[in-house]
Image (cartoon, rainbow, N blue to C red; front, side, top):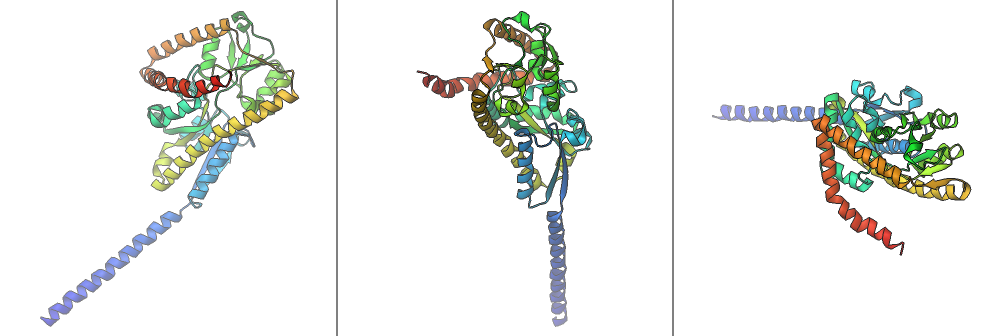
Length: 365
């Protein structure tokens, strides 16, 4: 009996010893995995040292690296490095880059339904659009569009309401739009082309030269936050208020296969860093526009701020409404996205009017 008992005890001790080794091995494997570094190459549409837009990418990088304790290492390549400002979609899709920063409406020629996730004429304001993305159907619908292309897309920073653009000649009627050569991307470009405008899209670093040399007659860019630096006021004196981009949301693109293979905590860190950088860009853009507009008014008093005449705005609105109907009729997913945006605007806009708009109007009395 004693021999049997000793045998049992020995077996238990050996078992415990073996289990301890297994636990140690597992712990070591976990520790190795936790210390593993994941390198991310991020390509952006913007030039080197580009303010606001580029700042959002730098902020994302800093937060992701710090929160991951260095397990994420991110290299940012500007368009000066990769030489393809409008090639971000394909480079991230193929895995040449793991991430990208650009704007969704640049890909409408490849995937038409990407168009709706940057901004829409006469659409949501920035706060409304953020709410649609994160508390309604926005993210789900965006994933429907990007998933077939091995991509995730996330909000990447909002400019807020943009100005209607810089024009070398005053616009007094719809007739003045006919034959006008203008840089204006997205849905707004399709809308205004219905009124006879020759629409083009030009990379940010080439805009001033194109306007100065007469390659284009007008352009929309952002607003004072970035327009002052670009110097458009030197070659186009008419500065029109906006209608076309009430909430321009940039995007972070991520290669889906790469993201899905990351440890769960790193995936969450990336999402939190993107979301934070996105909202921070909105506040920065608002701040810079206020500061730069004060400078523009003081130092460049010859800038002529204009609002498009009622006849022009009416024609633009009519063209916009017709195009929305055409897009919805041509593609079930486009209809789903547009219906979702319209439904959400119907729900949230009365509150925006009752709160922000009513407050601002009260200050005019």
